[in-house]
Image (tube, rainbow, N blue to C red; front, side, top):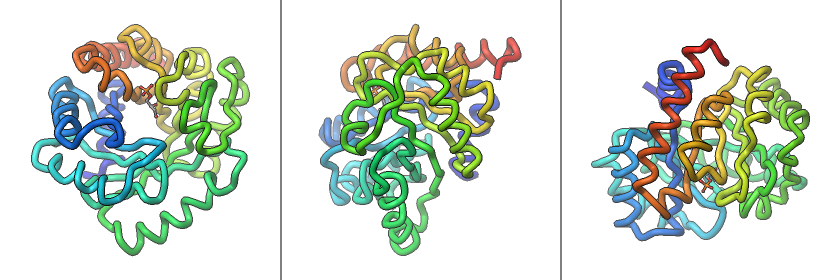
Length: 256
Ligand code: 1GP
């Protein structure tokens, strides 16, 4: 089964899935493996690997290779640049920063990456993703020259997300930026989900079970947490549980 098919199946079953984001730039290879194992034990549905700054291809292979023996959930690359590809992962979010002001981040890097995927990374499953930077935006918003959509402009987020669906993107990611002071608001998530039928992933600044559940109940198909995994791995267990509970609650009450 492909990774996309697996994710869609889990979303159908649970309403909302949880994905753990690990940044090789922030931990040692040993800690990286340990965190991935813990996240898997706690019930995360996939491991995402990426960061906005400073990860080379050789470094990525060194971090990912040992994971293959221990991690059974999919490992999905979440690249900050075209140098962040590795054959030791299962899939790659082939992402376009749709609200960047620089065409390089919308289609330039993707053309370079397409060549690499054809020639060197044939076993990686690409999953196209419209990456929308919201509010704070964090490092990724800064680096990708984004014009972040204000937290309260649900109408602009909806317009971008629906445009992304019409343009054929397989998934949409509402990103407040790693470590954001405020996560994407529930109202924006539910507004986007009222029209968009592709999976909507939400992340950035979620560091409590309450906020994670709020995103799931509002309609997020996937909730991503990164910073909290490094800061307080114990809390991750409660966050994953809250995401799954929120998703089940939403689908059993007939929500989208
Ligand atoms: C960043 O959305 C992710 O790309 C996760 O953000 O590190 O704030 O959890 P946090």
